[in-house]
Length: 419
View 1 (cartoon, rainbow, N blue to C red):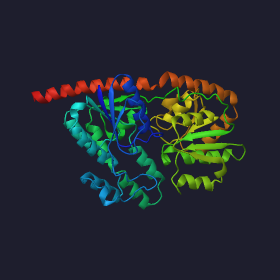
View 2 (view 1 turned 180 degrees about the horizontal axis):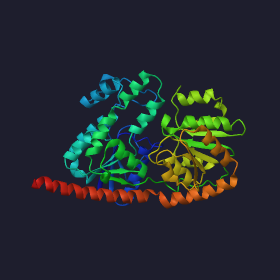
View 3 (view 1 turned 120 degrees about the vertical axis):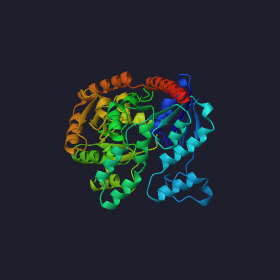
View 4 (view 1 turned 90 degrees about the vertical axis):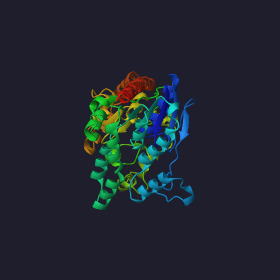
């Protein structure tokens, strides 16, 4: 099959979208399919055999100059004007503007592809592709309405809440588009339930295909673990990732133990995370890491005595799967799909209530004091990762979903012709 894989932004080394695009496209090519990735900035890192077509935006949120004002010479068309106007009115334009750009591109290349796979853009442009007769599949990792609720709950002051409501204005569009899409893939049963509840999607159109891990990269280290090292990964410095809960728990533990916390994230300068680290007086014990490769990430995870996933909610949790593959014991929250990923039997991870500092402190301390249990958890985690989470299995199941979408599309076209 000839696949057009769409992703409005594809951060290479963290966050589900960029990781998903890279590994799924690689395994689809290994199965003999042709894959062309259409992406806005930041562009993904792709493996040999996968074609990248850049769909450049004005890149208004790039580092180190987010919310920048583009020069007049950068404007190319009305979509660029729409992008800037939406940013100037405090909205987030990328899902809409990317979908319009890629719909314009594919309108002239419809004959080149058998199926289009959208990676949670859910912009109005997808409906143009659907109307043009292209079979369409969309992955929704989890409904962003949950992020909005969490951010609003953590916001202080009416001005901040008003600004957040405007920023998340694109969710109205995403809900409308999702309800009209013929085939939706998601990554967990938890996300499937939330998609039905939050977006009003027909449950019969939602299929669960879990994400995977590369066991040759994410594997147990041959080097000794660093005593007292705890590692946590957060794709974004947002309240939903539960980093504040972890920092408060860590501050209690570090008063009586020699510990190091390594956070794989890029904290917002002067934001809540940086401020809390200073307020808790743990600056010397906390280290931030970002922009590292998969190999470096695996080495870091494998060097820790414990990995922690304190999120208030996760649609899947790649960090938990990567830690299990590295044989690193886990303390995780029961947020969203995390129990589904690690299992609720306690063999691979200790589970705690999301946002409960006391419970997290107790669980981390108990596991740090129990090397025998950490060793047993290490073996069980690696075994679970190998048995349940492989990217090739993801690609096979996704290709089956493509074939169904193509067959359904042909049936739909015939019915329209008869009508």
